[in-house]
Amino acid sequence: MRVLLLYPLFPKSFWSFEKALALVDRKALLPPLCLVTVAALLPQEWEYKLADRNIRDITEEEWEWADLVILSAMIVQQEDFLALIREAKRRSKPVAVGGPYVTSLPKEAAAAGADYLILDEGEITLPLFIEALKRGEKTGTFSANGEKADVTQTPIPRFDLLDRYAYDTMAIQFSRGCPFQCEFCDIIVLYGRKSRTKHPSQILAELDRLLELGFTQAVFLVDDNFIGNKRNVKLLLKELKIWQEKNRYPFRLITEASVDLGQDKELLEMMVECNFYVVFLGIETPDEESLTLTKKFQNTRDSLSDSVEAITKAGMRVMAGFIIGFDGEKPGAGDRIVQFVENTSIPMAMFSMLQALPHTALWERLQKEKRLNTGIANGNQTTLMNFIPTRPLEEIAREYIDGFWQLYDPQRYLDRTYRHFMLMGKPRNPVPRRRMNWPTIRAFFTICWRQGIVRPTRWKFWLYLVNILRHNPGVVDHYLALCGLFEHFNEYRTIVRDQIEDQLAEYLAEQKRIEAYKLEREESAVA
Image (cartoon, rainbow, N blue to C red; front, top):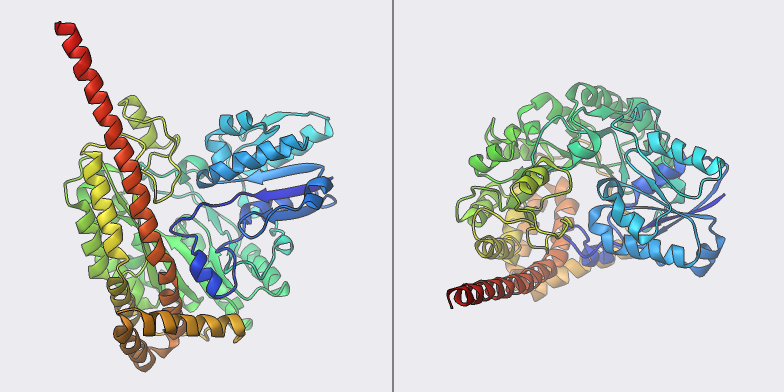
């Protein structure tokens, strides 16, 4: 069996980083870990080719070669995902699909022509799919019916299928699931509230494989909450520290965690010793009432700003997610988020309007309250809310546009980044650096030209760079990388403003039409 694995395009988003990636000759931030894991779960006597549409087009030879086409996608990839299904069917190829989008909304993939719907976790449903193929079945839907996979049995992903020069950061996974109950989150719907973890030996074997294949990038542990099972995480970190020391710290590590990480000094220390240098936190909002309403109770137990400071001082850069539009939210939420980001000096703040994702507790509640709109949430930052909020949508959208614009003002971004790195604890281990090749040299001079010569912030850029070199030189490459990322945010804040304003204008025009129609009906009834 010759299998063509296809990964659909992501639209331009907060995380796409096109301009910044181009500086270092990379084409995408992360590889499709889902598909290389699928390739490892399928029969190894089959042949595989992977085409990631985010780094290149699919060739005619690949289409002709394939006996079977397999796709995986998240909701944000919806448009290209459905187009690829239709193209594969136009070429008379059998199509199997899976991933979070298909699991949440299988009817859309079926309507586009997919033959096999492989829902839930592949460790359980891919064997069912393989048995159906052996029986000669031409279609089928395969579900785990609530069962969750034993990830200790998950094989090493087929990293050999990846173009190692195309991606800025590699990806592996330690756990699935999260113990919390945030109303808007689909992770607990897809993977459950029990954090299931791999054995430490599996993670070390995956890192060994990356080293063997010559990968030199940072590694992102893509767990939605890396510390969801603290006992097992600490067991991993004990062995990971030994592995890093033995191999001379070849990888810098990134992950996502709940904000209570800042209250566990032992865990913080262990992570830093293992070369974790970036962590993403879901802070969402500094408004405690909104956090309580959306059942994000873990963010109300301790000071959010103290947690951010503790993590930063320990030696990890904090990225954070923020949301506007919760029920009962008071006016000025956008300004309060901006002020929190400024006070905590978080350089990268992912700011979004709330979206109701399929089958979440928020989705179910809004459906009962008849407040859901017909549009499906796409998880992007350039989309209006897909439900009727409790305060005027126009007010929320205006606060969102203004907040995003302020967050990525050149001076504010540079100031926050500098303050963050001056606060950050010094690196304790040898820092793996990018090779001094032409793309790296070119990236350095491009950043210095754009931010040190062209922009009005040029004097601050040089002053801050000198101070970083004097007071915390171990983070200078990390600091410059954040300066490079501004090339993306400077463009993206304009995209967010323009697209949200266009959608808002359409929404307000439609509301006027509805009001005019209602008035006309009332006048007709009176007459």
